[in-house]
Image (cartoon, rainbow, N blue to C red; front, side):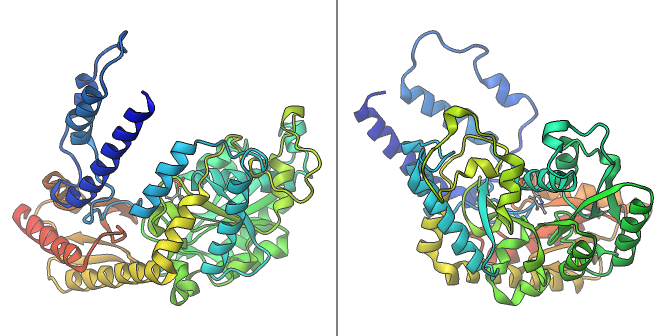
Length: 470
Ligand SMILES: *Cc1c(COP(=O)(O)O)cnc(C)c1O
């Protein structure tokens, strides 16, 4: 592709993207395709001869787009949002064109220094005290893995990397039964073993870890000769928004000398609004916090922030310094690849800079406040319908509900049929979860372009589909 073609096709792609965003509302949120159908539409082998861009682009529209789920659809109420504000997409075009590897300060000083700055902008935006620094990771899963590796090394006197885990005391890590599966996987990958991830029962409306049970578990493990390493607390769990009492957990962590990592992957974005910060009161005592601007805030995937209180312990855990990566003579510079499991790094700070400047924190706060208010209003409307039940109360913009099954029909089966029927229709998109082992339907508002009308239309779609099925 020569430069002129690159220019033309880049313009075509930009126009296509703008048209897509303008019309996505008219598409079904989730495509109706059968497994394998897209695969069958793609040639079995790569072409020997070059093909014209015209044909490639046409196939993208004809074969690929019909099989996409539209995460930027304003009536996407499933999972958690994966917002990509338009301004963040523009930053990504630029980053992709420049295509720099941002592993060391000297491999792109501007990327490193803007990253440092954006971490500090976000620290202030979330109301965290000075003293936290941080790094942009690709995903919360990677941030949690980095935190677990750091708690492991700290507990082993920094000898796990060199000596391995055999012959060491059994390490123990504590979390609630509401945490995301990325915690399980971090524990597996860190070699700690699933049997040493101690799941503390939860209680109360926010499904928080039972503090007495946490304390007892740590004491019992110590008495049994095991080595507690850390606690992973959760603010805004994926299933129903489960949230631990961070101040109380932090006290226990401090008393036992344990590393505390807080997973606020989704809910963290809401902390730009001071009125929601009570949900993570005590957060300043955490050793590590992860939140994903690529969820609610509007930075396109991937963009996960890990705040850390003691970067030295992370660098001590993760830095590897072969000769060819040494950057001699630059005092005080940061090489962010020493904070992460991956070496190669994308320039992710640019989209945060564009996003916060183009919308302002006040613009982003308004979006989040609206989402919470509309979601709470929808929960109230459903609560007032005699055949609906609110299963878990709104935590920010997330709640779950159930529809009463007709006589003689299993409630779980009925609600699974309901969520499938809603999603097959394509007007809105929802997902289900299990609460006390019974099916509940999740609802969250979080898409950047969602309006009050979209949320109100969701009410009609839910109620009408449910009554038709019943
Ligand atoms: C989404 C989510 C994660 C995983 O985030 P990734 O960035 O996809 O790894 C972890 N924890 C919680 C609470 C989440 O909502």
